[in-house]
Image (cartoon, rainbow, N blue to C red):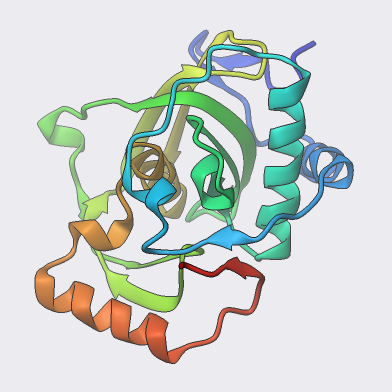
Length: 209
């Protein structure tokens, strides 16, 4: 069985990431150690990460630490570069707009281009553990499909709607060197950075030199 524990497919394509969420998340987290979060300005956040090419125990341990770090920071998604690791992998523990919980791991994610009829924009507030205490409205499609690999290197596809779709897009962006504030207007980005400067993160962060 995959270490991710989500081999079952829906329609022979999408993984099932809504079953046994509590048990799976706890298993990852309890094996891991929480690490401090990198914040805006740290170089690892502003460049494309390296592809995952080795699917081994070291990768599994990284994912365990990512789940522990995500829980410690009270996040719903976390990319590897947010704990300083230059690899294309993210984890998530996120509710969708219907209140359904999704838990999983994606390596080497690629966001699928949506057909025009599926690009319904949602301009809800967005925040980021790497931009602590700051939020801004950002229009994103309310449906997303991400394709990548699981912890065994097997192909997977994950789909989400609403808030979970936003999470999938947000975390994939991270691994290609983009934070959500990079998609804001200059004025809104300035406001977000001001919010961040005036706030105090509720979790441990890596200070920028």
